[in-house]
Image (cartoon, rainbow, N blue to C red; front, side):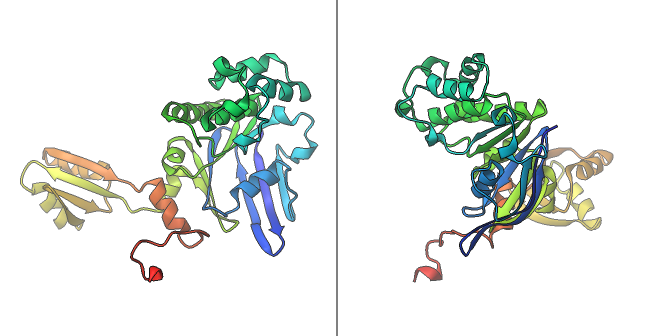
Length: 310
């Protein structure tokens, strides 16, 4: 299996440290969400992994080797960092064909990847006529050209319509099921929550979190259950007597703090108390992410009416 491994990776631009002794491993067989505020060092890290920038210190390897030393890099790593990088005067087919020929990839892969990206019908059009979403699809087609073991995508949903967003989400999950390493940078928390198995979160060039999605969400929230019963508060009385903390949630419902649905449901079943509602609330990825990165966001808007505006 081919993984991405970063060890003590550091990148300085003059007096500015963009990446600060970063260490993580993106494993095969899972989609790793690569998150962080603007200026956190995500794009710089991806460029360092791909050999587009030189590190000031540390290493970044793919399958144990630096990208520049790979014999057939597009067969090992497929990447999309900038959808606008393709030459506008070329057709989509010519662009992908040039990559195939220059990297010793069979020509049949050109039509295969364009078809997979939904661009077969427009393969003869010049890229300058493409929308942003179409350019994104073209970049993804190019990333998949060499049938790589590792796929790295920077904001792949940018410019895609709803159908395209569903397509890229399912594509990333399929690539992971096939045993590939998938590293995806995104600012769309709802989308990341839909496709990522594991999270790596940066802040000011440093590693903040490296853990499975479910574990991260659990670590940033206290469980609670929304309860509405049909028998005038009999279960609620039992819970209060049992030491549970409760709060009125309105509409006849109550929050049971620190509880799980399984334990409340089991108690209701044992007492034969019918329930109208029993829902466990969990924090969203967006809420947990914002809570984690609140102190390291380089650019943050000032809320209207705040003292800073005066």
